[in-house]
Amino acid sequence: MDKDCVRLSVRVQPRASRDEVIPEANGTLRVRVCAPPVDGAANERVVALIARRLRLPGSNVSVKAGAASRRKVVEVRGAGGDVAEVLKRLVETP
Image 1 (cartoon, one colour):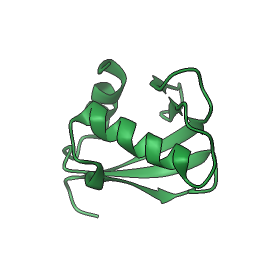
Image 2 (cartoon, one colour; image 1 turned 30 degrees about the vertical axis):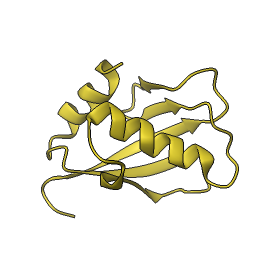
Image 3 (tube, one colour; image 1 turned 135 degrees about the vertical axis):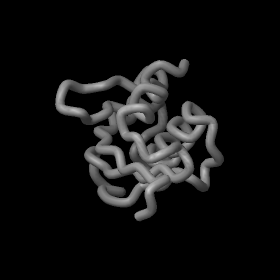
Protein backbone atom coordinates (compact mmCIF):
# COMPACT_ATOMS: atom_id res chain seq x y z
CA MET A 1 0.00 0.00 0.00
CA ASP A 2 1.46 3.37 -0.98
CA LYS A 3 1.19 6.70 0.80
CA ASP A 4 -1.57 7.91 -1.55
CA CYS A 5 -3.81 4.98 -0.62
CA VAL A 6 -6.45 4.94 2.12
CA ARG A 7 -8.35 1.96 3.53
CA LEU A 8 -11.80 2.56 4.95
CA SER A 9 -13.89 0.37 7.22
CA VAL A 10 -17.40 0.29 5.76
CA ARG A 11 -20.69 -1.22 6.88
CA VAL A 12 -23.05 -1.63 3.93
CA GLN A 13 -26.83 -1.49 4.10
CA PRO A 14 -28.24 -2.80 0.81
CA ARG A 15 -31.78 -2.18 -0.45
CA ALA A 16 -31.95 1.25 1.18
CA SER A 17 -34.38 3.90 -0.02
CA ARG A 18 -31.48 6.07 -1.26
CA ASP A 19 -27.70 6.05 -1.59
CA GLU A 20 -25.92 7.84 1.25
CA VAL A 21 -22.80 7.81 3.42
CA ILE A 22 -23.23 8.18 7.18
CA PRO A 23 -20.37 8.41 9.68
CA GLU A 24 -20.52 6.15 12.72
CA ALA A 25 -18.98 6.91 16.12
CA ASN A 26 -16.32 4.19 15.89
CA GLY A 27 -14.74 5.57 12.70
CA THR A 28 -16.64 3.22 10.43
CA LEU A 29 -18.76 4.51 7.57
CA ARG A 30 -22.28 3.24 7.04
CA VAL A 31 -22.95 3.22 3.30
CA ARG A 32 -26.59 2.81 2.35
CA VAL A 33 -27.22 1.75 -1.26
CA CYS A 34 -30.37 1.05 -3.25
CA ALA A 35 -28.88 -2.04 -4.91
CA PRO A 36 -29.66 -5.54 -3.60
CA PRO A 37 -26.88 -7.78 -2.27
CA VAL A 38 -27.10 -10.06 -5.31
CA ASP A 39 -24.31 -10.83 -7.81
CA GLY A 40 -22.11 -8.06 -6.43
CA ALA A 41 -24.59 -5.31 -7.25
CA ALA A 42 -24.35 -3.69 -3.81
CA ASN A 43 -20.53 -3.79 -3.93
CA GLU A 44 -20.53 -2.14 -7.35
CA ARG A 45 -22.88 0.56 -6.08
CA VAL A 46 -20.68 1.18 -3.00
CA VAL A 47 -17.59 1.55 -5.20
CA ALA A 48 -19.42 3.89 -7.60
CA LEU A 49 -20.82 6.02 -4.77
CA ILE A 50 -17.45 6.44 -3.05
CA ALA A 51 -15.70 7.20 -6.34
CA ARG A 52 -18.33 9.77 -7.31
CA ARG A 53 -18.21 11.49 -3.90
CA LEU A 54 -14.41 11.74 -4.04
CA ARG A 55 -14.44 12.70 -7.75
CA LEU A 56 -12.20 9.78 -8.67
CA PRO A 57 -12.45 7.16 -11.41
CA GLY A 58 -14.17 3.97 -10.32
CA SER A 59 -10.96 2.06 -10.95
CA ASN A 60 -9.39 3.90 -7.99
CA VAL A 61 -11.84 2.36 -5.51
CA SER A 62 -12.02 -1.35 -4.71
CA VAL A 63 -13.38 -3.72 -2.09
CA LYS A 64 -10.33 -5.38 -0.52
CA ALA A 65 -12.04 -7.50 2.15
CA GLY A 66 -15.57 -8.61 2.94
CA ALA A 67 -17.00 -8.87 -0.57
CA ALA A 68 -19.76 -11.19 0.68
CA SER A 69 -20.21 -9.46 4.04
CA ARG A 70 -21.91 -6.29 5.23
CA ARG A 71 -18.61 -5.22 6.80
CA LYS A 72 -16.01 -4.38 4.18
CA VAL A 73 -12.60 -2.81 3.77
CA VAL A 74 -12.59 -0.42 0.84
CA GLU A 75 -9.32 0.83 -0.63
CA VAL A 76 -9.18 4.27 -2.25
CA ARG A 77 -6.18 5.28 -4.36
CA GLY A 78 -5.45 8.84 -5.41
CA ALA A 79 -7.45 10.58 -2.68
CA GLY A 80 -4.45 11.55 -0.55
CA GLY A 81 -3.09 9.70 2.43
CA ASP A 82 -5.11 11.50 5.11
CA VAL A 83 -7.97 9.26 6.26
CA ALA A 84 -9.70 12.05 8.20
CA GLU A 85 -9.79 14.30 5.12
CA VAL A 86 -11.16 11.48 2.93
CA LEU A 87 -13.88 10.70 5.50
CA LYS A 88 -14.81 14.38 5.69
CA ARG A 89 -15.11 14.62 1.89
CA LEU A 90 -17.24 11.46 1.73
CA VAL A 91 -19.70 12.65 4.35
CA GLU A 92 -20.00 16.27 3.23
CA THR A 93 -20.33 15.76 -0.52
CA PRO A 94 -23.94 15.30 -1.64
